[in-house]
Image (cartoon, rainbow over all chains, first blue to last red; front, side, top):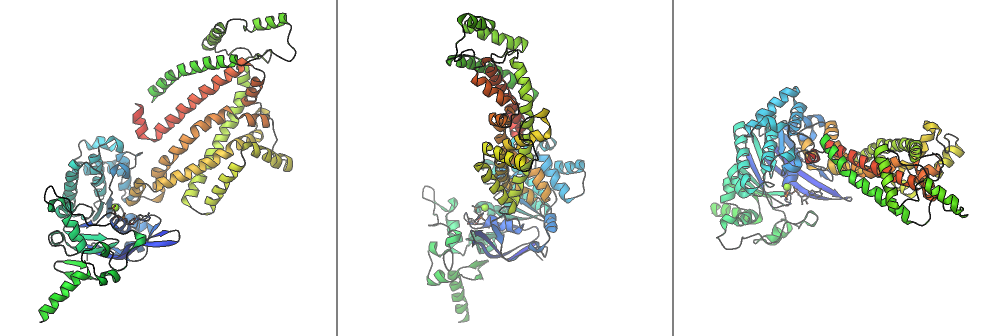
Length: 330
Length: 310
Ligand SMILES: Nc1ncnc2c1ncn2[C@@H]1O[C@H](COP(=O)(O)OP(=O)(O)OP(=O)(O)O)[C@@H](O)[C@H]1O
Ligand SMILES: [Mg+2]
């Protein structure tokens, strides 16, 4: 049994009585200790997926069906109390900008201690001890002193280390990290990412890493989900996705990488932009930007099929596949 | 923090001095004086009176004497219009009145306004939210000079519950209406500010973090949301406090409380230089003290401000 399975998860936003679909029945699994990357352009629904998994969507967003099975139990059907005991304890979250995700009026120590004590019967002193140990694990110098500091007194990199330590406090099974390094200086991004990888490896923690950065995905994760307009359009081993992407969108993402571009020439961006939620095209949502789009793509959403080493939702890929099978049959 | 308070106090002294000098000359610039009237006094008597109050001296000598008395004797001089009373007496009589109902007015505003705003934010578009919106509109349509007569009509004339004016040593029946009439419009604003501030805080990333840590809802509200929510309320209240405690001329006159606002009006009519000046100084000192208090409250809540103070 996988640690986490998401089944047909649908999220909508209601807007003046109308609702738009932000996540369109997505399904995926994360095994114990597995590191999964989630990539896609801005607005694809990556963050929404993370929040929905914790059942932490805030209005006007709401879950309109589907399951989030954590160790076989549906998080969405649990009582508020059970959900709370899961959050921060079994499943932790790391957000983008530690300057705004840590409470500015509470010390680091207060914010760590309260997390521990919300889930375990500990005295204040014991909780502080554990917090100190965790800060040490993420290589924070003089951890004792840090506990009494406020977030604004620390550097961005230090804050994000603290956030990672905070996520690890209760030895969770899964960490959802939503662009944990985007707000940081480029020079420390790699350090933080390496730290996160090391922590997940040594503690056997599953990781769902949401990011724009395909380079990071290939370094850190074992499997990758590619999202587009609220759907997972391609999923598989990170190696296969990076080296042999099947979906034209994924191919576009990879071709747009600076490494794929000869020095001095322009980056090969995918033309156009992601459709907005209230102007979703018919059929495959990628067809207006797709070089291979045909009439079928404009009318029907493709089903997910297994092809090469990946699962992919694309009519063109399906055609290739059926060509192959018919060739094989002859 | 103490050092900061001390520094601020030292820094404000020159400001207050400037203010005294400016007020002093401004008042003398206006034509007329405390002893001009329809029927001019005989010149001999006039000279006598002027000499008694030192008004025959050159202006700079008057100013100097005035400052000397303030700084060395804490004496703001005699009233020019009310014989046998000096400014200290007038302030000592009127200020406690204003301070009392001003204080209760502030209590009324905060104790009702903040919870009302919180409820409205937590139950958006609920009954209480509409009550608050309705109340905010109501208080804009009925400013205190409309509200006060309405209250007297209702509670004094129709129901006979509360006295329509007077002070009577500050018994609570006499304090209620001045305090409520003075505070109502601020109450609505405080509720509105609290509501929008709390909504913003609740939508902030650190509240999401607190939820993601699995903290109980109560901890989230009290520990994480409350303090940041109050910051804009404190900013808003800082000038309002000064206004409330120095009293509203309208409230003092309408309810005949004998508060300081009444003295101010009287002094302005009679060109009672020393009283006007004394009250101006009182207002500016209060403004300073309350602003300092608000800044300290801000620092107590926000560690970023606190470390800026050092
Ligand atoms: N409060 C909201 N109301 C309406 N629509 C929303 C709201 N929050 C998010 N959305 C929409 O949901 C979609 C998915 O948003 P999401 O934040 O998951 O994108 P993302 O993939 O994380 O993008 P990014 O890379 O920019 O973080 C977007 O189209 C966004 O406009
Ligand atoms: Mg996002």
